[in-house]
Image (tube, rainbow, N blue to C red; front, side, top):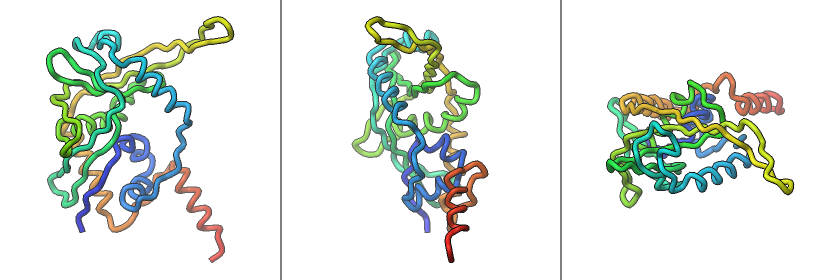
Length: 226
């Protein structure tokens, strides 16, 4: 029977790549895998959003068009997303880190990463950024509607040294790097088609080869008395 699945953009990178079974169980059965993200990263993320709020885009990256960092931590939700060849549908719902408003009337979606800029990051997080763009341009009724979305990217802030501020206080100095994610809606829709194909399976697929959570559960199951 066709389903209508709620998808979280934040799952499109590591959860999907690491284990399709865990992804399936979360979406279809409502079984969330344990979070392994240390809470300190959420705190750093909140501090970054406050710091960049209202800043000019030139201060974010000189490669960006003139504008400002206009919105931070906005929930977005898309209208139903249909893919040719799939009977089931889905919608995406998640929280955008920040949104850029350009002087030409278009917008950009930005995601902060406390890490070094690496070549694979644009492709790894492109699905998440594209899902935010889709939700903003094709919102569910009453949800945030911003269009067009002309730029997608990551702002990577790698800590490089600690600076003394006096009286025992100190601060990390970072080197921000803008990583552009070119817009490719065709590739995004093809990815959603792959996701729906997995979610439409009659049962969970095989676990990912590196999924520690699935390996742990399988080991427990093998060692329990039957």
